[in-house]
Amino acid sequence: MERSFIPAAKPIIGPEEREAAGAVIDSGMVVQGPQVAAFEEEFSSTMVAGAHCVAVNSGTSAQHVATLAAGLPEGAEVIVPSFTFAATANSVAAAGATPVFADIDPVTFTLDPAGVEAAITERTAAIEVVHLYGLPADMPAILGIAERHGLAVYEDCAQAHGAAIDGAPVGAFGAWGSFSFYPTKNMTTLEGGLISTRDADLARACRLIRNQGMEKQYANEVIGLNNRMTDVSAAVGRVQLRKVGGWTERRRANAATLDAGLAGVSGVVTPHVPDGYRHVYHQYTIRFEGIEGAARDEIARVLREEWRIGTGVYYPIPNHRLPSLERFAPGLELPGTERAARECLSLPVHPSLAPEDLDRIIEAIGAVAKAGA
Ligand SMILES: *Cc1c(COP(=O)(O)O)cnc(C)c1O
Image 1 (cartoon, rainbow, N blue to C red):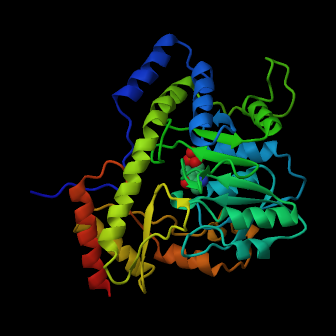
Image 2: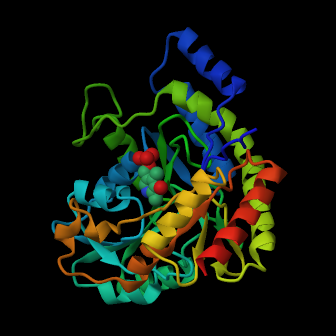
Image 3: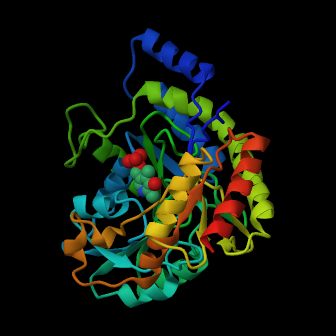
């Protein structure tokens, strides 16, 4: 009998979510209302240490609305990593600011503080970190740089629900944080996003922009958009919020099993987690020493076709090389970013993995590492 396929990701949306969504649909009141308000309160108290929360219709919208709400001056630059999903730089550009790409540390895959310092100009207004794969960026260093240069810090927490440094959660370090609830993320509202901020004025500005600039019906105060979350999504999100803590523990336990199983495999570099950092393993991303590009892709093919294991390359093309974004970075070279794009390979780590799935993954990586070496 053929082995079952182990997918790279597996959204978990079950009967409780269906029931919660159905109850909202049956009520006839489906747009932003009491479910969104309750979801915001519950996310605030359980995930971001009491920061104000503003739910929106996607993670990208969260970044876009928060950047607009920050009211950056004309020509402002925001430093972002290039090794991330394009939403990070897209939302900066869509808010009328200029994304400036800085290099990452190819070991942690997050912004390299030295690369950030090198990218600062007199037009820099903010540094936007990405807690990539669920590992917090080097916040002590980034916050220090920001303070010395008078810059704001933004956090893209799309992959990092519940990640923390010494118990301090991501999304509450900087001026604002943005979360995504896309189905493959650590928790979902089908589509959805959320802004977290400790700044009450910024939270109010985000609420206005989310809803056409209105607090009072037809008394539009500022230029706004429609980025509202539906009550159907929020009801699903409230159920997911009760489960995400347990799922995160499963992800962390799966990662620990992979760490232990791959520790003795020569040529395989497993994720590095600095002391005190709580990694929530949106992705479990490895590298094979001396194997990159087409050879890495061939390993992914063997894993998929021979071992029936799905993997992912996040991300094969750095943002500063994308046709959409390269105009912001003519001729830019980011060696750490380029290397990560050539080497990274994400293995399944999601909460639905069975012990025998993890065994198969460890056995397969041992075999392909040996064959590739
Ligand atoms: C998913 C993701 C986003 C965008 O979130 P959406 O909900 O898909 O709009 C932004 N940044 C990163 C790093 C992401 O992984």
